[in-house]
Image 1: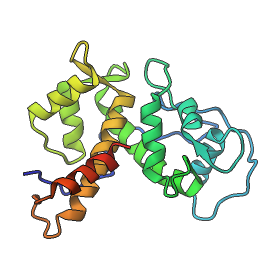
Image 2: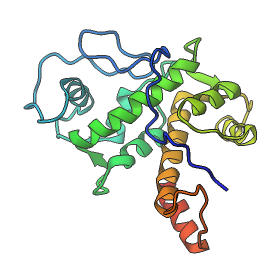
Image 3: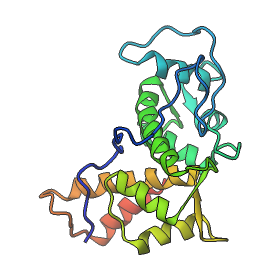
Amino acid sequence: MFSIPGSGFPPQPQGDSGATSFPTLPTEQPFAYAVVPQVYGSTTNPSPGISPQVQQWFQAVDKDRSGKINWQELQSALVNGQGQNFSETACKLMIGMFDRDKSGTIDITEFAQLYIYINQWLSVFKNYDRNQSGHIEESELSQAFQQMGFRFTPQFIRFLIVRSDPKSHVRMSVDQFIVICVQIQRFTEAFRSRDINQRGAITIQFEDFLNVALSCSN
């Protein structure tokens, strides 16, 4: 049986937990795990309903001024605690979360939704990466998921660590954490759509299971 936590995704801010949100460019110091170029002035018209903060971030990431961003542009803007860009896998998954037309790009409205997820996930991660190393260990990962409302078993947490760190089996990087969050969010949504009575358990046909697994892995 798989139980769905009440809070679900995206994770909710935890009051005075010390979580840090994305900065407002260009005046504030960039967040340790997400560094984008400074933006001076605006080259595009403001988008109704989109906060100025999100618009500034979008303009910084949209280097070719196309009005859309792809995974390469997103990758160039996200840096982990060790000064390295996020992985290709992480950036493709983040773009894919809101790429409704499967074009490989997202517009500013879709980016605004992605912004919320990245901000909250990185805030949770930073809350447990106390030495700013860009990694969290097994016990910290368990606490991070608990903060997001998930009560995973120690065995499953261990599986996630080993999967992310096949050599030493001790830690998970920030971009690997993002990958796991995206995948769990996708599976959670697929599960909830089938858990009609909200029982926390479903019966699923093999072909439907394969459809979910293959769809969520892209």
